[in-house]
Length: 255
Image 1: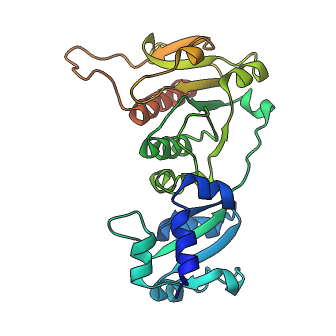
Image 2: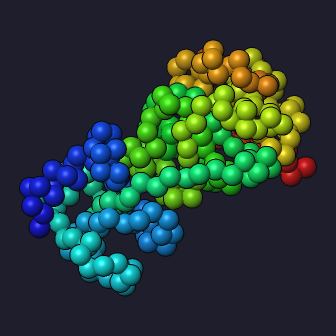
């Protein structure tokens, strides 16, 4: 069982200032745990699971130092979890910098999130990027933090494969002079008519305000998902729009 100090520490990782203080973050869930053990990308600081889960997964835990594996009770699980129906395991992971390679970006599609604030959107966009083989997602300074537990949960394990970095868009433009920077807006060229280059940086705007004026001035082009006749919605959810554009890009590059 956990001490009050341990319980307080784990609950503190729901807050950004303590994630920054300790350099750690939480991942919850059985499927996510299995992927963490398989990928071994992040250093594992601690595994906290119910007795039944620990017993069922003894072989998968064999590579870990026994001192990092802790049994917790149902009550402790509920106290730590942000979910209405908690999973059977938590893992504390060490945050890790993900430097990017300019030469790689010159030959691939990457995403840039401009002030995405909703953790669910951020996590879903990471999952979309993972599905379409996009390995780099950049963020502006005002985005929700990558290590937010709701981002990690919504990504469904994709946080283990998609690399993120917080970088000003102006810096990326300087570093990638030949790469188009295309903003997803309401009045751009139709994504279905666009001829897609081998590399591009796709900019996704804030959920309610869209792409900021300062970022808009850095764009080299604008793209849009045309609304068909009879369509009534004012706009699309940021993650939904990202998924549509990524699907179109993938299809057009195959032709």
